[in-house]
Figure 1 (cartoon, rainbow, N blue to C red):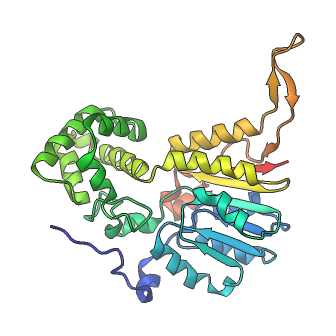
Figure 2: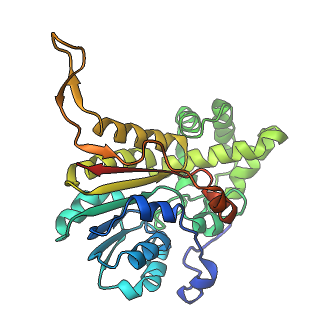
Figure 3: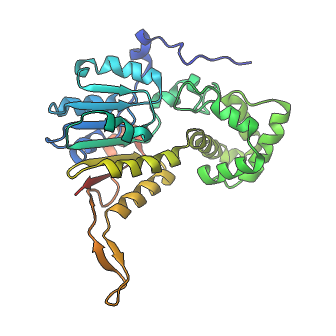
Length: 323
């Protein structure tokens, strides 16, 4: 049996082990922030790259609320950002608790909310976190590092039909039923424990020219279901819309079509006037919109950023302001 320990990397070695290039940093600083912003809610602190850039450029910020489910990342960021320690409130929790967190704090306005939905580079690079099919590690994929082996538990206990549905819905896997059946058959002989276990099954049953794409689709689907990412995103956006006040802004970076579609639809809905059918028109405006889109089209990384950080290629950034 393989054994891994996510805490084996000591904090004193983190500066050597952990590295993350903040995606769309310049665009975030230009579109989401302005000189009057006083409070920031960073729902995905990660290794603190965005936070360092924001706090450096906008010294007028009085409070920076930093959330992350990964305790290792929080500990690293506390050291990285210690010069702003009096401004930062660290929260080891999911950003879906935004309402409860901000209601408990005495915050100054305007407020800027940043949600970077991508997985941190360290999640991919550290085998102990179990996100990558390129390295052998525990089949975990949970952002909350206390949920050891979460993906393995899903594969070992899930109904074949449910597994198939997840692979199709969240991974757009065309052979979802086939791989669900293979997973159920394989676990009868040996329970899934590591990323290698799943990778070998996929490679054995996928045509050679489709192996990498199949691996990417299935691993993405598992990561989304393990962390309930799409439901959490929808709930968080709804909570954010309810607590934002005039002049506040929210910016979201998405990385795949499923989450970007949710952000696009939610932003579009609240930034349109409310209409209803009347004797005069099918679309009579009965209420003006309460939000304004600051990005008509999603902002994508430029060529220079893609050269520096190829992992940013799928990032899409949207910004909304409360009127």
